[in-house]
Length: 146
Image 1 (cartoon, rainbow, N blue to C red):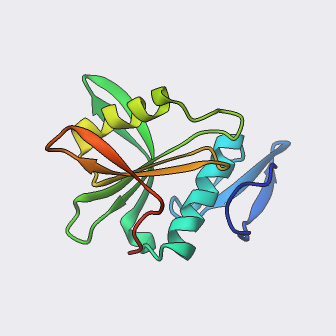
Image 2: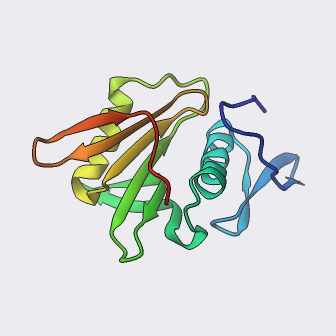
């Protein structure tokens, strides 16, 4: 798999029906390794190792309803009180991050109301804080630590 713009992390792998699977510490199961999953697993480790977010506050790949359409978010981090703190959209490394990518996560967030957003393709990471009052987001250099 491609080297990503994250620190080096240790992962568990296994072969399953001629496909490589990676262990997801949040979902507690092996997931078929795709380029997007590779980014997702690095992002989870980044949240745990670098940002010190508790594992119990992180959720991966859950279904949500947006305008009567079923969508799936990649990663969400919740505050201790259960409110959504951070919403993350992961793309495969070959997918460039565009305005459309931000519009996608912003649409999800109209319903979810996360305080922070992150969009990453594993090579480029973008962080922003929501300004709900003015209906915009402010780009940040880093995500806050837990």
